Image (cartoon, rainbow, N blue to C red; front, top):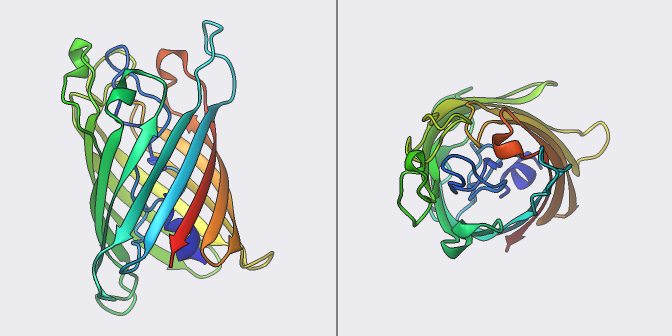
Length: 265
C-alpha cells in the first residue's frame, strides 16, 4: 500500500514541487513535473517494470493574493513508466504537461527520471536509495534578468527507511538551475533539504495513507506539505493535500491539491 500510494505523481514537488516557470523574473505557478512522489517532494519509490502510471493533479489557491486578485488553478497531467526488469535496481522515466495560465503555457512539456533501490536490496536493513531529476523544461532563459524559463533542471538524492510503528522516514538534498530558482528578492536559491514521513494507517484501513514532507529553500519550490490518500481500487488512489510555501512569491497564497493516480496494468 505504501508503494501504491507513494509511487504517485510535489510534490510534489510537487515537488514536489512548483513548475519550472519564471514569472516576473523569479516566481512560479503552483505545479510540478514529477517523478513518483510523496505529497510534494520526490520519494524513493520507483514504478515497477512496464507499469504505466498516470497522474491528474490540480492545485487551487486557498485565498486571494495580497493585491486582492486571485491566481487561477494549475493542472498537471502525464505518465511515468517503469523501465528496468530488476528487483534490486529500478528506474522510471516520464513527462508532464502543465497548464498554469501564464506565458510558460506556450512551453508546457517537462521531463523527469529516477533510479533507485528498495529497502534491504543492497544488504540486510539497507535503506532505500534514489537519485533522479525533474522539472526539465524546454525553454531556456535567465529569470534573474526577467526572462522566461521552464528549465529548473532539479537533481536530487534521497534515502528512506521504514521504522516499525513510526512509518517511513526520508531525507535528501536537491540542487537546481540557479538561473530559474530565485527567492522573493530575485537572488538565486537553487538548493535545499528534502524531508518526509509517510505511513499506511493499518489501524484504520489498509487503504489509507498519510504523509508530511518538506522542501527547503525560499524559491517557489520551498514548501511544507501534508496529505491523505485513499485507495479506491488496487490501481487507483486519490490524494487530498495542502501546501504551505516557505515564501509566498508575488503575493501568491498556499494551495489545496487534489491528485488522482492510476496504474496500468
